[in-house]
Length: 131
Image (cartoon, rainbow, N blue to C red):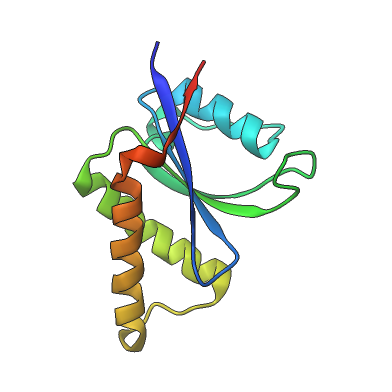
């Protein structure tokens, strides 16, 4: 039985959060997404779910009450994959918040990437789910 690890990381200074899911199981990731975000339909092929980033609008019946979340789903805490996926997170965050990723904003971008990378790697505050 494989486990699923989960944590929320606030995307400061915005009101958005990054939800990080770590699991080797496509089925567990899909089940968790359906439950947490109250998604009625969630179809994706396994090669499209693990090691990916997506923006999810939660259902109104979920505890998140329609909040939009950026979700990063990792197969492992491999540093190279984390950095790769965090680039996608930064672009999604830019799209959702309107904060432009530009030459003039590169220090903010670098500091945000560093913080998100360190938080993602920190194993001590993941919640563990067994299915």
